[in-house]
Length: 375
Image (spheres, rainbow, N blue to C red):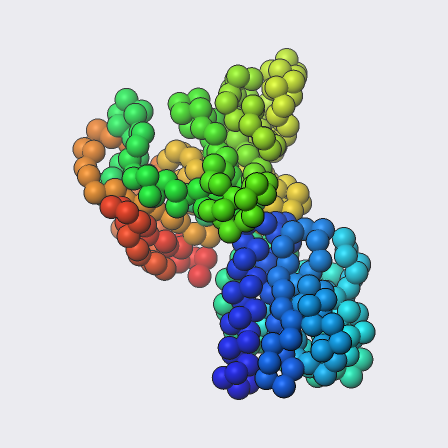
């Protein structure tokens, strides 16, 4: 592929990025149509149920699409979902060649779109900037391939690794700039997960509080609120919890049948899900819960919780990425730590991490890492 081809695919990737906060549960996809070295149409998938990137680009190109090359970040679909197949639209428009960054992991597509294009006499190429295209949709890809969402754990701590004082006081460890950065993490997530301990101690909102313009949306456009999930084995969540009064859906995952408490929570607007328990005790089986979230088309999970739930998810092998905000102060050895990780007694038991990114957010540091076993 020529350098010019890389330029056009990079442009398609930038377009796809514009759907980061709006396409869920669909993947983020961009498309650029090029004829005689000139862009004649481009587009990105904006919302589930709306036109796909290819159809937006074709509508802009009109008759100029005939004989053009389509650069698309994900294989064109070949099935009828909420919209007709994009492969058929490209064939009908008379494009000469399609360059797809990656094959769609959705089993309903999985190469069928490219096959249909070839059978129609259209030249097909794949793999251009594939890693960058995959990085746009880690949750969609993992859900299709493994039946689980991509999971990030967000934590805020002092430089000595403390998340709250011994009294439980934790507001605010990090700066306003770091908290605004967390809002963007929330906006890109499909679901935000916390534990009952955090809910009872902090009464968190777990919602996105950014203005539409801060997310690149039009003024007044609705900001999508992720599903809120409370892992609450014994159903201790009070019906007066603040997050139950907010727009969006709250799911409470428990392990007990408590008809009266369940009825009170459902009357307050919650959905209650009774989950299987873990072998080692009466706690929610996180694998089963995450599998259920995937069945509900949850692509990306953001865990904002205390050391028990964060440690349990890490030890269960469910965590794909850690995002740690470190504030420039010390809180002392009586304060609470980041993770509860029972059973780590020797140096050989350590949880190995790979640092992916380090950057400054206001006065704080943001570290992005992944467990080495997830690499």
